[in-house]
Image 1: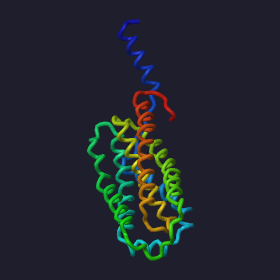
Image 2: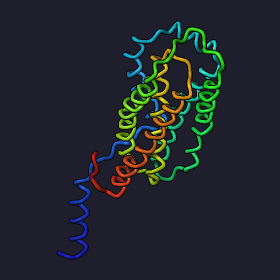
Image 3: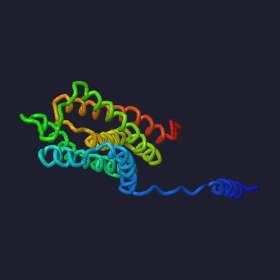
Image 4: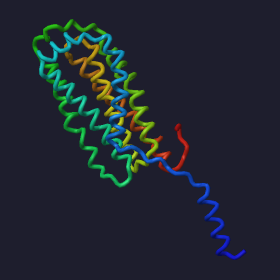
Length: 225
């Protein structure tokens, strides 16, 4: 058999074993699916929420709804940016999308701690409650960032560390919004520190673990997924 015939036979065998690759949904479509998962977590929590009291607190303290708006926008834009940076060729500048909402989130939360009088309708915060907030934020963020990672790992992020940090930021923002449903207390400095610590821990762990997983997949290794 000639070299040409051997090459054609080899190409035929290789091409015959090829399987079509299913195209990933668009970044914002995947973001919408992820937000659907956040809403699924919100359903059981909403059964514990006092929406009338929550609405009264948000109306009485603009910093509360500004903080929650910032957290929600941070979650949405950070998730979208994570999916965007998971696509080769997309600009890393998209990572700046959640920066302004995150500043609003942190700034409004800090302003709430400076109030001299408590919000009407709130109850005194128990001494160990900030620790409970920290645990809640971590426990809720973990499955959310894992779900994001499951979708991201199917892509090929060229900046796995950046993509993983965005996923962590998105999950922390979503967890903060969910916490509001069952948090009938006014903002305190201890609360703010607990929230900041939770956000930093989630982003840090996402950066370390997520970048390892995503970088391993990018290099063709089988890592966890």
